[in-house]
Length: 249
Image (cartoon, rainbow, N blue to C red; front, side):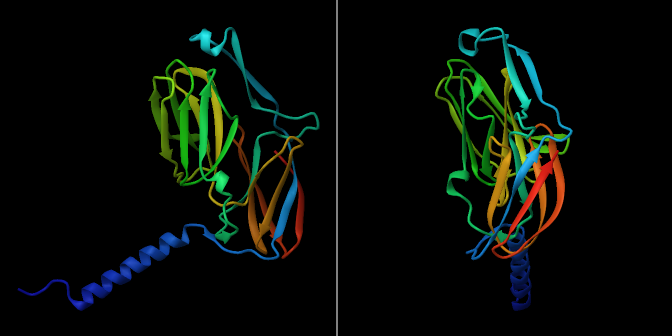
């Protein structure tokens, strides 16, 4: 019987695998040594955005969650008009500095019926761990934010204190997630999911700083879990240079 795996067929198969590997590699991020990199700094003003705090009635587990109402600040603006919990990042960077190891994964604790972080940060393809530190049921539900749409990433019941769940997060289109508890509608958090290390969460003064940027041109995007994304435009970073911009929503 003639062997169907002829030399030509094997060669074609190998070429196909090589092409697939090349395509997959092109879509990833390549860590390289960066010498004489530039920086991108500035502030993020609230602009047309307004402060938005919403009140939720605590209707269950008052002995754990507290009584009365829970005030949830979805949009916070400091005294100088700067937007809190915003992230500035460079879009679709193919190669550059290494990721900060501390940002690879994220742990969210649920204690007192609150998430441990209003805004968490992790890398795409990293692991999100959720821990229940309350003596009541929590159900962590995370959604990939894609424009005005959202897609479930994790939906897990954690009925007992000490329950822990870990899931690899791989966002396809969005750059962040909304986190809720299906058992307590007043529990809310957001997670920025970085696809490259060139991002900065604004500090308490509304300032951001991104360093070690290879010389070149980059698209800049502002991200806020509640307000969405704003495309800033393109910047050009010179070797060893600094780009300073005052951004605004």
